[in-house]
Length: 125
Length: 194
Image (cartoon, rainbow over all chains, first blue to last red; front, side, top):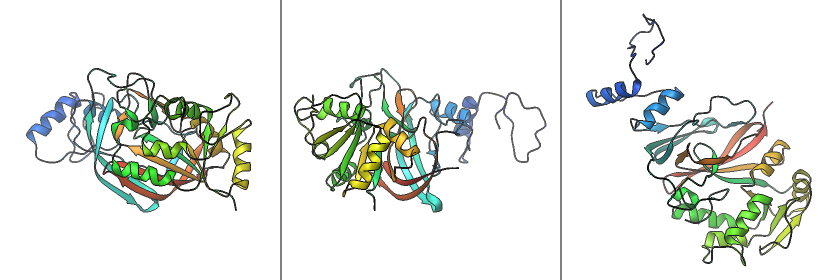
């Protein structure tokens, strides 16, 4: 658990409380550990780790609803541009979609191709 | 029996239909493959009527308008698209339109599409046309949302969120397929929630 504000002791078994920045800590855990790591739903943490290039798999569960009126906590606010490669995809009962991607954060100078792109990006490149 | 109306839209994983001038993604976000293009070609070759709002019609004419579009060599997918009989709903566009078979209808999209659904013997398919389809969804006139999700997140350069300002909907997933191993096409039946 990453937190600089929570107090000790944490009443959670099998939990280590890290006060340092998660990027450095996860980088060290990836370097030194052999157990796969998984984070669930923590939007800011996920974004930080993804931006730092520490996320190997990006798995999304898409529920079959549109919440244009009542939705909050947008997952991708503040994200960089990211290229994705699907490595798995499942459909569950009830129409839940579960694609898993390998993310590659895009950086570098913008705009070698065209500006003023189309509404659907349907224009051939 | 009314004609089936499909809102057909291409999107990033984070729900953007387009991107700004600083984006260097290219058409289809640079991710189109043979399966996707074959799928689109098959879709456009089915008998149907295309329904467009003014912005999407303008954008199509600028790029693939038969006389004035800047693309001179149009690929088979876009060629099939521009051959479809098309109804354009707009109060601002002026004719004549640079399109092979376009009917310009002035009026409220809800009235126009409600009438077309009663009268058309062919299914109706709309592309992009986000604000029009938002209104049609809210009015309960959209039978299918066909969302093609390209494998990118465009948190920095994305524009035109597909469902911004939409109402709340329950969706029933009717079909899903993965194209070229990375692009997902999801077809939903929407119903207003609550």
